[in-house]
Length: 120
Image (tube, rainbow, N blue to C red; front, side):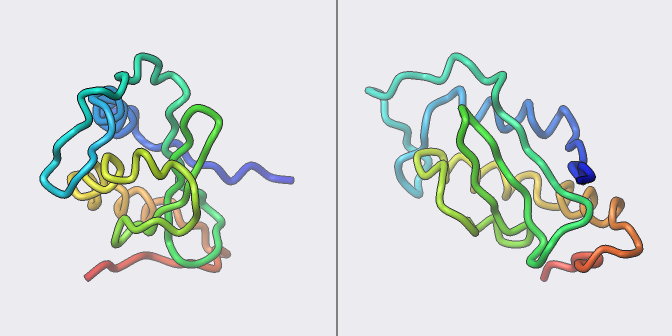
């Protein structure tokens, strides 16, 4: 079976790791739980986009043995997982959405069932 994983830039991974390191965001105003332990280990963090993929266009975040998929256009979760970190991922997505879209569009193979993404 072919590996269709595409690397996402190290800069994007580092930015999301910084979000995770600050602790989970607990409300829409960006407040974080002070009693939560900060994440000291971010080596397990991965952001992935797959080149030959099914709809809708999405990216995957893997962290500490867990993963979840998120819509590239909206940042909304498509699968369960990483619930504690959803607000961090949402904030990061809002700041990096266009980079994800550009990465997706640059890497579409001609036989991909999901073509370029045009988010409104």
